[in-house]
Length: 326
Ligand SMILES: [Zn+2]
Image (tube, rainbow, N blue to C red; front, side, top):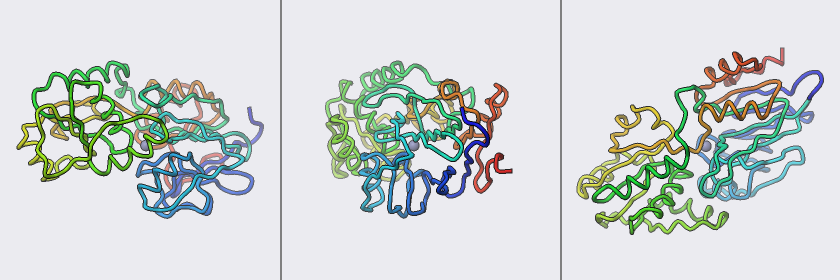
C-alpha cells in the first residue's frame, strides 16, 4: 500500500509511467533512449528502436525480424518483467515508480494454453490494463472446447482448408491444432514461417509446416495457415476457389456473429490470445490496485464497469495526463 500521491501515468506516443528519474515509456512508436516493449505485435512495436530496449530475449528476436533492425534485450533494475501469457515472449512489467508500484500488463491472457503459461497477476498500487474485450458480451467458451471445435472442423471438412489468424501468435497455435488433426500436410506463408523460427528456438515447439509455394495446388488433405490480412487478396481468393477450399477465421472477435460475414469465412472460432471480460475482471481483483487505467478496445466501458464496482478507474486517452496530476 502506498502513502501519499500515486505514480502518474499518461498516454502519449506510448504509455508513460512516472519514476523519480523521469518517465518510463512503454510500447511507443518512437521511444526515447530507453523504452519498454511488452511484445512484438505491430500496434506495440517501435519504428525506430531505442538504445536500450527493455523486453524479453524472444521479443527482441521477433522485433528484430519484424522491423529489420538490430536490437537486443536490456534489463532495468526498477522493471520486473513477468510472462504475460499473450504471445511467445510477451511480458507484463511490474515497475517501481514514483510513489508506489505500477503493473503494466501490455496485452495479456490468464489462460494456460499450448506453450504459454497464463499471466499470474501480482499486487500493485496502480494497474494499467488492456481492455480489448472489456465488455460483458465478450466471454469466451472454455479453451479446451474451442481447441476441440477447431480440430473437429479440420477432421470433418472434405477437401482442403485455409485458416486465417494473426501471423504472430494465432498462426502458431493454428499450426499446432492442425498437427492434432487428420490433416497430413501443413503449409504457412513466408511471414508466418519466419516468425516460427525464433519461437521454435525459444520454446522447443516444432510446428512441422512447409512454406507455401504459389505454384502448388492445394490437395484434399492439405491445411494452409495464412495471416488474416491476406484474406481477400486476389491470389488467395483464386487459390481458395480453384481448390474448393473451406475457410476459417480465428479470433476472439468471433464471439460476435458479424465476424463471419465481414470476413466471408465458412467457419469462425473464438480462439484468442487476450483475456475475455470475466478474466479481465478477475485480473483486476487479484491485483487489487488503488488506481486502474484501461487502454485498448473497450477502455471506456471497462473503466465504467470497474468504477461501478468501486474501483478508481479511468480510460487512458492519448495526450491527456492522469487525473492525479491535478
Ligand atoms: Zn498483442
